[in-house]
Length: 393
Image (cartoon, rainbow, N blue to C red; front, top):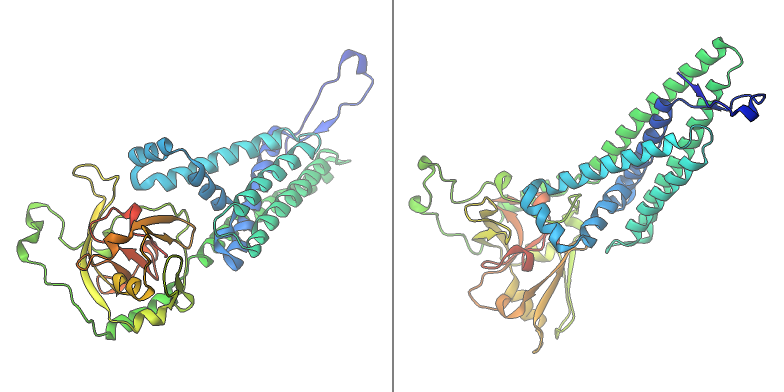
């Protein structure tokens, strides 16, 4: 490992140069420490509370506080890739800060440790400020911060031991240990981040159980057959009903919420005569309706692709609201996503007899895909999604 020394002034010529880490290793030290912190935090989040990963929590906080003009710029410039662009931009900025932290710590670890602590504090604050914060969410950012500080201090200590090795042979031996340790930490950080992300997204078992239910369910209402003249695929138009894999996706979720149908519940309260709490089984016990509904994003330009049609399966939302007894004067139904996103839907629209609003559990004969709101979402024909189509409701 190359090292460098800082020359002394003429007045300090009799003092030995103070050893310091090479620039390359110092930069790598900063990046590796921060990467380990992010990986450890993501792993703990996947095990305990998927929404508490500090990296994604900072991204979610950025979306919440971003001015509207910036949000619209991102949508118009990057379309459905806006989330990937945000995460990539965050990664570049964090990597640059990590490099600077390492370079500032070539002689002593204090500056880099301070930067790692500051980054950890930002992640902690982002988790604390999340709309769905719970006490358990503190575990991931706390582990992330601790892992970053410990790794930075330990690698810095090992690097200085290489610099201060009494003999070339000792220096080579310590350098090998340091290289091996760095490789293990780097691989571990990537593996932890990947495993944490995977743990936080697995809803396959729950969706499989719902698939069996839908395969055997008797629908109280079926969508009418689509006339052959509704689309012209031979001339290059898409099919009238959009395949689930091609259905457009617009939302603010950087991490697709992973909710099991078995633990899902919905509470309708506020200006109602009868507060209603529904489980997933309660929905399945109601008449299941299939309706062909076209959804259009308010950001869709003329000729754009942010429009899709699906045969949604669900229960009639109007009937549920009537059972709850919406009181006179109530103007909006405020629906909340599991990740904290909210929207207001006009009550008078939802109560229209022929509107056909659903609490949907299926699309095109299968359970809702995770990215489209599994296990339950709202679908209101004729309204833009930002005022009606709450996913993961």
